[in-house]
Figure (tube, helix red, strand yellow):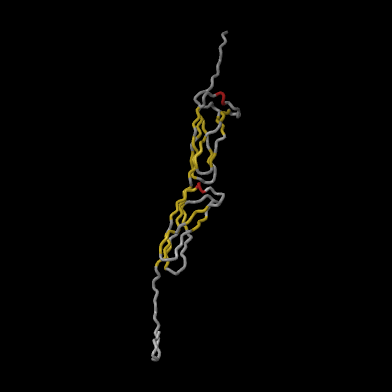
Length: 193
């Protein structure tokens, strides 16, 4: 009887792909995912993939292990596992804020208008306030300028704010009538004023 030698070689051709994913900022984490090809049936890849909450870009890569159906680490049974890194991308939330326009006739009082319209939505609990600096008293037109002020615990960089300023204007007063009153008296040699 001839005895032979059996050799088990490491499996080749395995590829771990850390997926690329993106979303618009919503206050929750975008967590990386990893998929694998070329593994033995019943084997899977296990990795603590990263996550990103704020707007920005992060590499999706991590230490990993190939495990069998019982959770046993069998990474050593694979030769030269190819790793493909991905990206996690959180995009800024786009908001358009437009201040109101208003015109009035001159009355000696400052004209202010603190109304805005908002296109887009803020993440719940992250709504800002608006501080207005535009006002006009004399006959002129100015932009209804304002600043967007987020709460202290909110990262303003998660938002791409486009501000559109309305116009506030004071115009000349119309309809004013000056009436000279009639006066009469008997002549006394002096001017009647």
